[in-house]
Image (cartoon, rainbow, N blue to C red; front, side):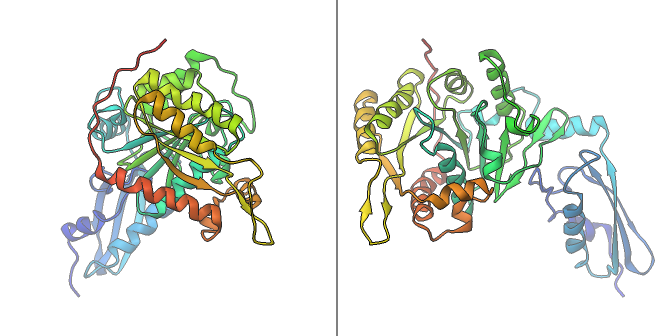
Length: 374
């Protein structure tokens, strides 16, 4: 029998990624020792970032799958230890550098950031955000959601997330669901406790989400914004000046007028409106006729108003039909684009994802415009 070598085993381990960080465990210096015993029995000692790592079993399984294919390996034992404080500090520097700022805020960042905004609640903004993120992930993009609706957080529940972020040397590793990384204040409060914060605390929380969360190499980050044009909209314009806006409205003219205000924030912050999405546009009744219970023309009106105000074309990039099953899917923590990809709303979301995907993959560098605050 061929005797396995440490070099061959390390080469195999280079194909094992840390599931939270998304980088090889060899690159992250997580492989402590490799012991090759008699008759091809191999013991690998792995240093976890934290003692209570929730993905220990996955790491062990991935190591077994990778190493068992090395010629001469007859069996594998995985032994776990924990990084020292110094090793965790080195890991943070390796991943984030020494500056207390986010790569997302840099002009040459490859991540396209979209703030999903609406003028009022009840238009399905969070549902659109969650399902659009999952649809983009299904197209092969690396996607994250920042739930910036601090007082009305709902994204974790819509994705069925009950896990909390793993903390590594003041760096938060966000949980993942349906291929999407997620951070939300809802992961830090007890049960359904209200978040009673004013402007400075809101800004500090968002600053931590931007600077202290390790998102990895994202293609796109969607930020689920609170309704309206308050402190959070101003803070994120300052923290992420290259972020673009996706404006959610319904066909109702009153809702459209309010949505215009959310998009008009771009005139004050120097941001760009990437597009308008109309939700609950229609539904198809059992007799085959198309019904428009919420009126018609809302997205077109928002597009026309914002294009004139911002002196640049703000296109309608999609219209999503109404379906009561959409609400049920959100309540069950399973996005409808995953549970029923053939339904009309899922198809519409997929078409919007198809519009956004080429924009993201071009990865054009953008020069930020300094926000001008009133």
